[in-house]
Length: 239
Image (cartoon, rainbow, N blue to C red):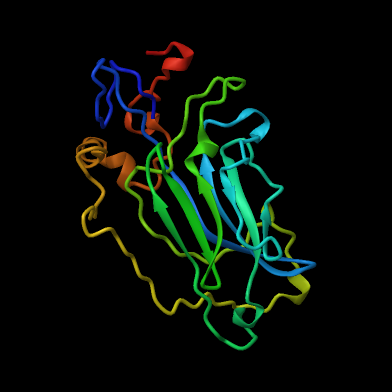
């Protein structure tokens, strides 16, 4: 959401009267795919606005402990997001129809701009880390630095298929298929516990309540459906 003033906005506000830009960040713990090398997971963050040609500064900002298992994903994004992602070989024994074991996947992240990072875990081991220096300003595409996600987020598990993600071998696919989850654990720094969707530095509840229909009716997909105009954009001089 634009940081421009003069329009409805959940806040918070900068000292100069403009609002803090708001976003809907996404960190993918894993998305699974098969390759000639075996079962892989893509572990990524989705960002906007984008680096020029989706090229972000990897030197000193990309940490891959074991290059025999993990490599930077050649897919870098599309029209709606820049994908900063790595592909890792998985424990093939833990795929369905094999030995029915469980593999540990996860993320650890410290939000913000300075000394911030996101680390991904594959098969119980650190697979790769993105440091906040990889999201610095890009003069060529005229964007400012982007943070490691600071917004309130929730955890979602879903099992789906996508032809845009990988070629699907329908002839050899066994259906129905199951994504089995043994446990989910969330750890936080005991001195920085933050639970909920409405923290003081990123308030959300009042805005959602004001536009409750937009957030509660799945048939409404446009702001015009509830009689509102699309939020303005200061970059385009709309506010």
